[in-house]
Length: 130
Image: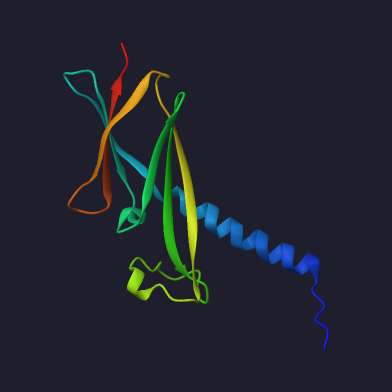
């Protein structure tokens, strides 16, 4: 038995699905920006994607890039994501979100990052090179 795939239909479905993924990347918001007395830059980011989601923070030049992994059920991609590995089964997949922030200069370095107890806030402290 042969299976014939309609490439145009597949591409159209993929474009719709990618559009949904791109819409969800707007869920990360800047809640607060402060400078400490030590001239460090404190960023407070807010997102439901921070709840038990692995993340990677990288600084390159004047950009801070945040990479988040979101566990999603493949049979219901529009439903709430699966955050626990216990419920991560073979019908699920990982969706990556790459969010970049433009910093006010290119001489910053990472001091620390921490998820606050509310679990939807991520605090990032950046130092500035002299």
